[in-house]
Image (cartoon, rainbow, N blue to C red; front, top):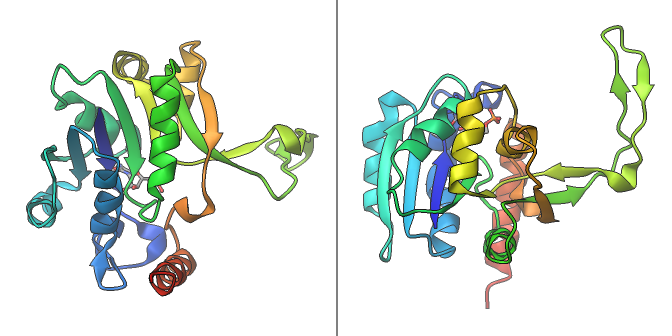
Amino acid sequence: MGVVVVAAGSGTRLGADRPKAFVELAGVTILEHALRGVLASRPGEVVVVVPQAFVDEARSIVACLDLADARAEVVPGGAERSESVSAGLAVLSDHVDRVLVHDAARCLTPVGVFERVLAALAAGAVGAVPGVAVIDTVKVIDAGGLIVDTPLRESLRAVQTPQGFVRGILTAAHAAGAAATDDAALVEALGHDVLVVEGDHRALKVTTPDDLARAERLLTDRWSALP
Ligand code: C5P
């Protein structure tokens, strides 16, 4: 199993002086937090995708981690998230047949989420993504702001990462090249079934300064829960 960790976003909404993955959370970069979680899922390969100017810094971070037997590579990403995913997929070894794509920004994702996605793939799903119930009622609106639909809340899930797929299907989905905000949407567009497994509220995507503060509180809770 291989994991593509996408960390090549600029993180403009965080307002930091560096890309989001290289901002520190409780003294450790967001990228390092994310990679520790990824490595706990015992991947055979990890590809870390970062902005071109941060390839060396990412290599230093990876060099300090306990990779166990995992092969690790760092490559530059693209202007859009999907280009970054494609760049990562391209360097996975040929024998890797299942792949997880993970947002570095979801740096506190518990290992149980990785395990549930992997278990679904092992049970035969071609695609599996973690999702959590939606708290708000969600509306579909038109260009003028008028509500055109109110989907049944019980049928909605907010999806997270890691998103797992049979590698060949994900590669084909990216080659087909439609625009999408997650990988599952590209695979769905090819007509494949994608299963939603239970996500976790701790897999939040750090996007704004408020999220960073929330993630710090989650870390403090985790540490204070240690024996
Ligand atoms: O921008 P967004 O919040 O959707 O980014 C989700 C993840 O995708 C982040 O971890 C970010 O670093 C990554 N990304 C990327 N390349 C881009 C844009 C986003 O690797 N061009």
